[in-house]
Image (cartoon, rainbow, N blue to C red):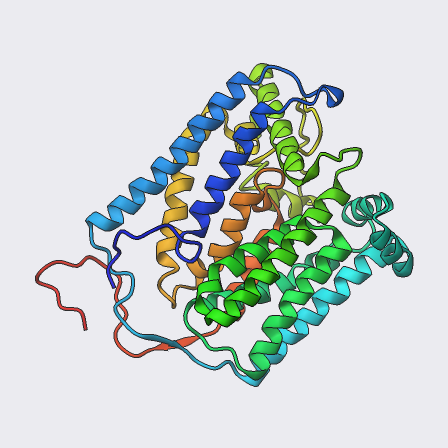
Length: 402
């Protein structure tokens, strides 16, 4: 199969679509002022920089895509068939799911009585937000908090398999459905919008792989998940009741205001500690090997730094070429994920798409959890066999494809 021009879809271009949505929503934040929150400053430079970075991202993505088209890159020349995972493999995935569910409950129970928490959740009391903050910043050990992301990795593994036309039967179907409920369970106990966004994007990526009758169920499921997303957003934002979209624009305005402060104050560059190298500094700080750099910068409301804001903290004006390359990287991952045997690209596809959308308020790429999920997907991704030769290279009129 040769790369051809095609319409932009969730199945083929999730990274691009999430980036477009994130950037448009952030731009929308410019038109909303919140004087009662102190968000009514001039942010013209921040908006101009954001639009410029958005254009550069699209340019990097388009340039790489054009390069792939002009060079007729072969992304798949074989029929690739995923083999049925062994019972041991499936058992390991099921155990990881159960560990993730247990960790979600234990993380909250470490801070407050589980029954009390559930009652507060059902009544929508603000105590839920306080418990969530306490469970993240303190409470249970770090490895247990990390384990709450295991269901995301299992769900990601099955998203990859379904995209590659793997038919779910019996135990595999059970594990896949359990992973969905485990993520919802995690969201209820950690008030984590990132996980629900991950679930929504993953579902959109595979919805066309099912029959028409199943697609109707998927639409109903997405509607229910969206309602949960709106409810979780309402629980997380105290003293603010302007609706779901108002909340998105609030985060966007906060991000732009903070970016404007960075531009005005010419804050010292943090050289990667806010983005790419943040997980490394975090781990070294936890083992007392190297203290994490102190972040001295002005902000309106911490941590409302969005993706471009963190990049600007790290690299200043060099953010421009970095975002261009990031756009090209998104295109590269989407293309390479079309090769079923490519573990790395397939493992990064869904997490990278999620990071692009959640970059409005939470930059997942900065967290150890992002790489933990990617690593689990790479380790436990289903293997397969090539019916014919798999080739990646350049096609010309003298080459024959088996």
